[in-house]
Length: 164
Image 1 (cartoon, helix red, strand yellow):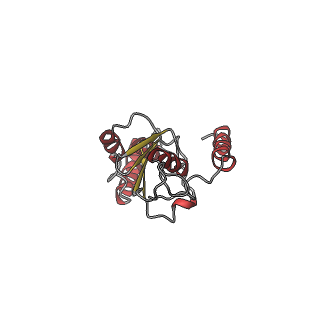
Image 2 (image 1 turned 90 degrees about the vertical axis):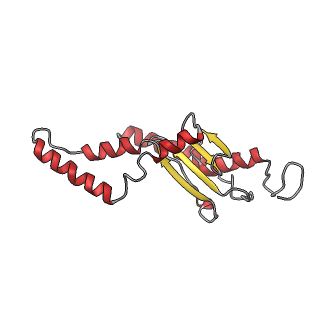
Image 3 (image 1 turned 90 degrees about the horizontal axis):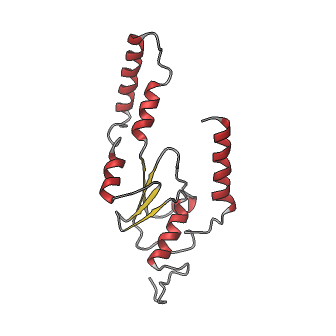
């Protein structure tokens, strides 16, 4: 990534996560929320605020570009004029990737995405498909949107005023 793009990413992160209020989900109750699956690409990396780390919510990340990213990693710095050496390097890198378990879940994101019928990314999937929110990389903001859709206000009451 060139310096211009890195700077742009930093500016976007600052705007989304420092300037935008960060009081989304931390004050509201999270009862009923058991699992969030985050589907993203290498260019739409999600951000999790510290407030969700202290909850019992299962948070899983799926990079839809994992296979492409691995392919790029495997080909970095290969010699152009020495096929035997390049092949030996790729074999060693494949061996290392396999030992790290990177092939085990390489296409898991694509399979789950198809199962949930996701149409675009990033996407936050709540409670194994109960709800989906598209286009949000700030997980706390996504939880806030989920709470609003479920009728949960920040005092822990639903829209009818009864306790959750």
